[in-house]
Length: 84
Image (cartoon, rainbow, N blue to C red; front, side, top):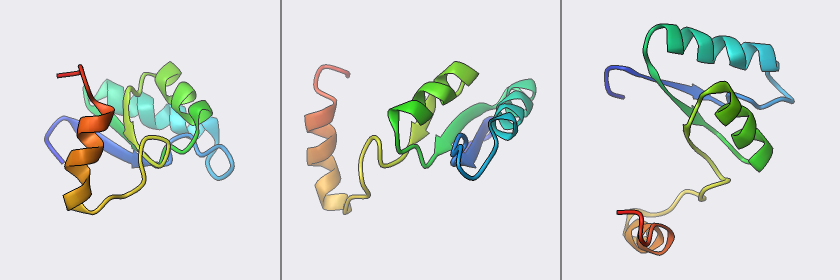
């Protein structure tokens, strides 16, 4: 993790962590000028809540399942055409 970044797991996993807890994490990271990377995003609803709170970066099953390194390049190329 680089200086200036905060990573937190399942930021809006509404079933196990309250929304107010997620808001507090995002607020504290923002007050420290940290970029926020949420981990464990599985649904569009979770992504939308995070974006609304100002967390614009994340990873999780919503985007892709874990891949062996030899499969990553093909996955990346097929999912990021025109984004370079």
